[in-house]
Image (cartoon, rainbow, N blue to C red; front, side):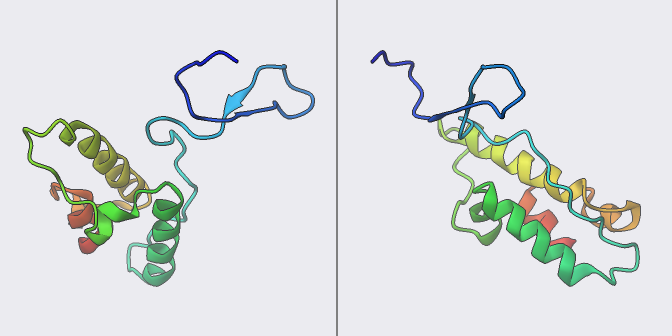
Length: 119
């Protein structure tokens, strides 16, 4: 068995598609943004929106950036680049589920944790 450097388990392609395989887990964040209904301008669906966003972030293993268990490392740390990438992913997931009015409240937040707390 040769080593390809990946720990991901290959999955068979769905029937009716090519015989190529896909990996079970990406090495760096998912490129999928889940279809979370937008937070309404008046915030009437806020509790449902926040719950859905939390579930998506947990699924993507990004919730620790919001709940504070994965704090930003020092900017000189080798881990900072990966942390910043994940923070941008979380920030995008939040921002892309907001209509203009709620987006205006998080527009200038620097971290995803700040954006989540403000939304």
